[in-house]
Length: 394
Image (cartoon, rainbow, N blue to C red; front, top):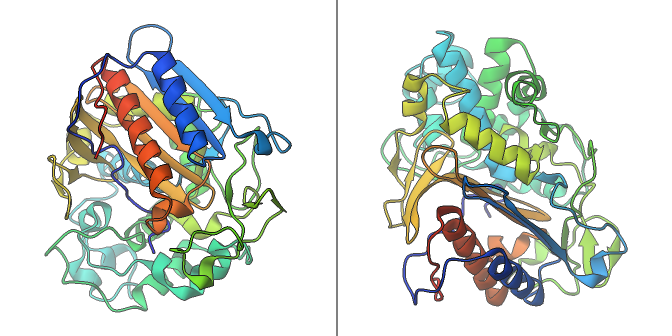
């Protein structure tokens, strides 16, 4: 399982060419996603020219809980990693950290073979550390049944209690343990919590009013309600041990919105909204958060195993060459929420697509839902670039 994962739903390159996707096209594709089974969808696309396109649509059965709005907050899952990498690189620019530092220097005795694992390996997923979210000890928290206030050190300890997947620096494999280790380093070096660092170094300076690091299930403002199928309606592909989530139930679904994401830690516990994330990308890629040297380090990529189209992973951010242009960004999946956030190389063009359910993407279930999500993401990327869109995403 990859609960805080990297998917490449936007990696679409071929098919029949249509007209550039206007707002009406994105509205139609959003409705198609609802028809395929999505509880709710938010789309925001800014092509750098005038008013951004903002769309919020939801299934009728969800309206009893909340009326969806494009400004609603949601859990961004592994998009958190881009912020963590930014925080590290700010400290690199201030000469408080170096990417070549071994993790042993900052977390002595906490990571086996820590002298051979550098901070860059952690940030770039080349450390070989086992992914702690695949450990069954996390399941009660993932399912919303245990609101334990996990610390970075506790999550790291679970990850490193499992054998490593490969020797450090020998290959690429996505692991959330890398980023809870980064969280522990950030807290050790600064003496501040991750929540304080996100607030004081990113959210407040950029005026991001809906962006924060969640330490429990509490929300700061109006938010998307996240849902998963209840046990009786869960797709057959989902294993028995993860079919029963905590939360209020109705219409064949469980509302997981108030379950704590604390178990995601520095790998995936940030909350934001589409407009805030656009402003974050604009500031990041535009050099407002990092000096030029550190922005170049952020964008220094290694190939992503198993993916073509020039897919590469930098420091907390990935890149891929799509039909409509080269995008930078990340995705995030956490129960109830799956989002793709992307930008061009300048940060002046940005896009976000959120769907308020996520389990289908973890287990290869609901192929119609997955295809409709991919189609909408592809169209949003093309709209961001003002270019034609493929009618046959793969």
